[in-house]
Length: 497
Ligand code: AHR
View (tube, helix red, strand yellow):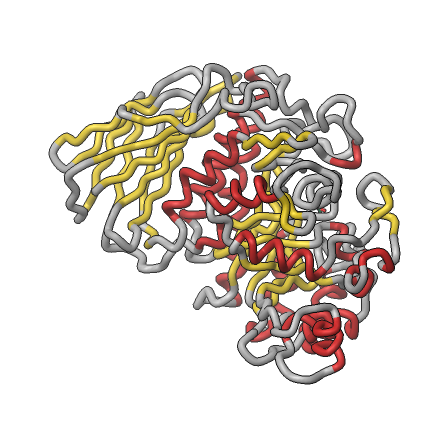
């Protein structure tokens, strides 16, 4: 097979946009994501609004995170929202049974979350409690968020200091209802979904976009049953959860976030590329019931899941983040962009201090991870017009198994600029890439990149900038073609004007 990758980008294909909500985030009451990540002690000497850390907010604003999913995850199906409103010192405590058995003091609740979203300029995506909550409880939470006039819940909201409704529209009906959200069968869940969804009402100016708790990985039957049983007008989206595990073992070691050899790296990248097959297969089932693609496929949990950092609470899921994770982020985001006719929302798990985090904190210190830089680079794709793309790439091979080295996606923004994001997951070889642009006129190319000497390089509190954005000057114009020398283990985004 040729040692050169070839890409062709077409301007007259599809006409949809790449929703910015593909770049969404997820913040659960888990470990140090909310508490000690976003929400810190009164005594912590960092810039804060109330107890929200502003350095974290500023970093996330820079990459324009479009939405934030909350309060879980598994936590969502044990969360009772009424415990998280009113005077903080009078809020009941609970045990976070899913995550380390720690005491949850409910100091971060509905109002605090909505304040965080407003500081971030991000849309809230609420996960309602189906597993252990009632239909009435969910219905009243919607009323509390969204009822403008006089009503028991709107009045209670006012009593707690907020007059106007927040107009929250993204609404998840349960989480992982096949597992921690209630261990249900898809038949049972889809019937229950209809009950919860019926009473989750639309208030003026806030039509709900209800999202069905979706399949785990390749559970195609879950998607089939939900699509068959739930009417289109009761669902805006259908979820899907898929994590990349270096060692696919949910009950034991998943592999270290920093100590891995090339064989494990290869396995991990092969595992992450499986997202493509999952999206194709789940989307094909959705197409059977929804040819017009009205229902969004919402990948509301994705990312790499490794062992926790040595010495940290195993229930807190705190892991480091390496160049490998940046390549995983770039690859998955390219896959989502290329399926954006169906995938209209996704949420990286999780924003701060948990799993594939964008940000790590330690006391007053804060660092951004290699994954953060990918989200920074890719923000040019937010709400940009999708450009159809074909990629042929040399293989990356190990022990007779082959995976593709180069993946890519492309879009045109509202100013007419074209952006092409390229990932070379091969850790050993630079790859020449020839890009043909059909029907696109352009004059100049600039670029930015992320790479490092080793795939397991990381940013630390002592050396926070080992991996950062750098200028890329390996692309040149040859006629109307673009010729790129794509470095090994790199993510590159080019801008053509
Ligand atoms: O993101 C961590 C956990 O992974 C979530 O709580 C759950 O939904 C999933 O299993």
